[in-house]
Length: 153
Image 1 (cartoon, one colour):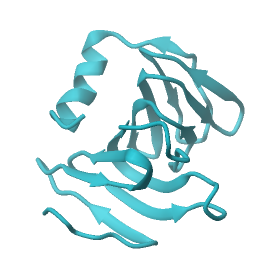
Image 2: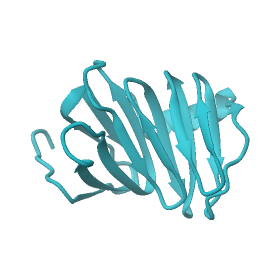
Image 3: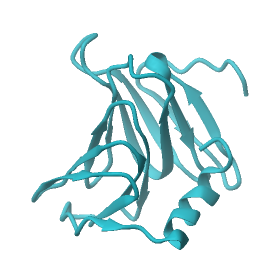
């Protein structure tokens, strides 16, 4: 649906085979994949903080069309990722999180550590917040995210 406005504290849920692209301020597009649930938190701590989202379940991809925005901070049940002007995706399954960086840099925080991901790198965070090792994701894992998010991502 084009032009659907989502306000602060809005909840978005997609069904199987559905995808939604949200056009946000600051040149950010959020592609929400099938069977996903996301809360829109709005700007965090005023106008100078990043846009905030909570990915409860499923998958979302994040694309910046400019470097003018304040970035985005995404919380999941097990991790927090914060970025500005990059292309990346995050998936939540059974409260565990997976983060992949296609372009740019993503910072991921769990309960036990903070890490920095570069292009082609990904990380898994357990449901209890334990951060795994940063690895270069293989083609199969990247294609899994691509298939879920579709051509918009």
